[in-house]
Length: 256
Image 1 (tube, rainbow, N blue to C red):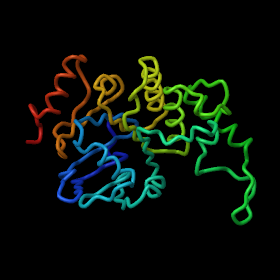
Image 2 (image 1 turned 90 degrees about the vertical axis):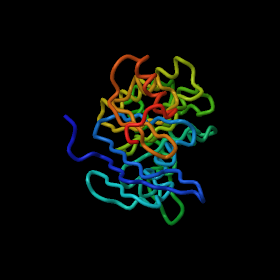
Image 3 (image 1 turned 120 degrees about the horizontal axis):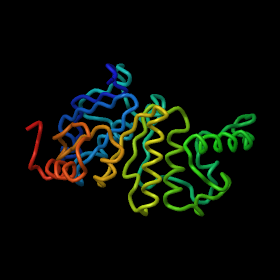
């Protein structure tokens, strides 16, 4: 049963960059415990829309509701406050630091603090990191491994773990399987499914139609700053792929 009050509702979102209209009145709804695929060609407006939801951009027009309450999203700090985390394609991990330091980066736990001087609670952070990875079924030899020693799939898993570590309501993933091996892609998609099992709501931006098909409950297609499709993910993969491509190239448009 679909929840009556969605976790996220974006209404008539518009955004211009100079003379370029990147978003032309886009609506988006994300339900509780739903995986929503966001699809479209380059410059369709996908990343711009998600950067607005994550507080990186401020819309020129439109409204955003979280749990039915209208909010003003003016910064990434606001997004964190409302439980919205965005995982960018470049991951933003510190390769020279270990897994624990990356998970708690910017949110370090202190034993005590006097002014600008504090002592890190390394034991607490290590224990909580191990608990988080265990909950998400992420297998690592040690949480004290430096990120630079991990595989691409493991790095992606750590970035996802960090994004969901602090009671995130919504996790936005920008091309989470880009440049990964087939085996690593499967592990990342399994992790996405595990997050849904644990009650997360997730938005995935991806050019890989197969990934959207495998994990998403619903799909939105953007084209040239407009929403042209909003539908459940159903049918066989070949039919699904044909439909998606038709919307991307403009052969179909549900809102024309």
